[in-house]
Length: 206
Image (tube, rainbow, N blue to C red; front, side, top):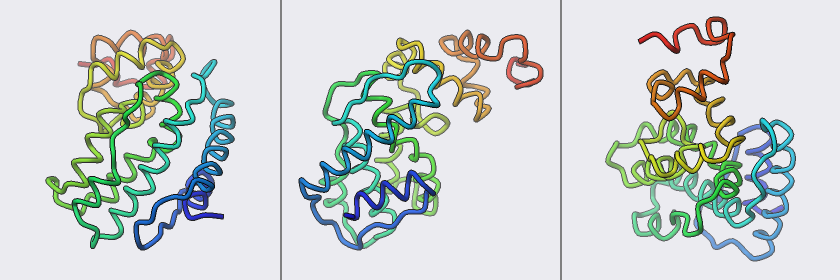
């Protein structure tokens, strides 16, 4: 199994990953294998999604897998330079959609953990800035760490079941200020329903 696909297997199964000690281009065969693996993970993840999940976007899923692998390399291998980082950690160049958001999340949901690993670096470190920018571009995955991105959040809330999953994450992380935002508050209220006092007693106290 290639390094990328072993990385994905370990990420999905136990969260303990290893990366190569140098940056090497992924081969077409390992990218094809990774795409098949990501589709399998998508089907498994859909079983726990609140309703019908957005369709699988193979390009977005594969981009996020490569991004996360490379970002992990740059956290662990500090001898790699800024030029290499800019060449490898490229932003998503495709169309943003509900399908792209959910498919990219198969890997980007680990962004908060990755940023936590990078907490020993300077806040101005180019890698930290790149990770924060990616979290802001993909707030469904970066919930809790992402800076405000109204356009990206509007896309999430425009898809009923993606919005439900997003609100579930906000509730799970007890993001009080986020829950009070005008666009989010009705969703949180609906999700908590009559059980707000038991599920999150503090959420509506301000």
